[in-house]
Length: 164
Image: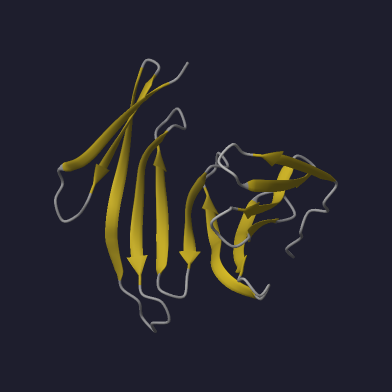
């Protein structure tokens, strides 16, 4: 199996009210690239790479400094999917350290838990340390998100969103 980048066929541009310019490029209804320029920041780009079956395999984010030199930022890869095609995990690779994300779903395929682990960068046998957990509960048209920071099992912050 080889990785493919979707061919760019359509370009959508829009201007946001807070002074940034974003450009999205899509092909075959899949997002392949987003470029953003903020008035207070340097340009950054995210490229989305899919496998032969259309599943997301990697996201490469890179930035340009004031002189136009491109430097690597973040790579998100090692996506894992369940039988239903939902993402159950991935790793966010950065020079300063990596983050592993793990997702759990209930029988209706709704997200119920998201765990984020810190992993040391460039370590031979990196230890995983739980950074925080987000739990989700559903009631009618409401979704409650609860933030839990280890080692405590108590809720640090809670947010409720209402679907309309």
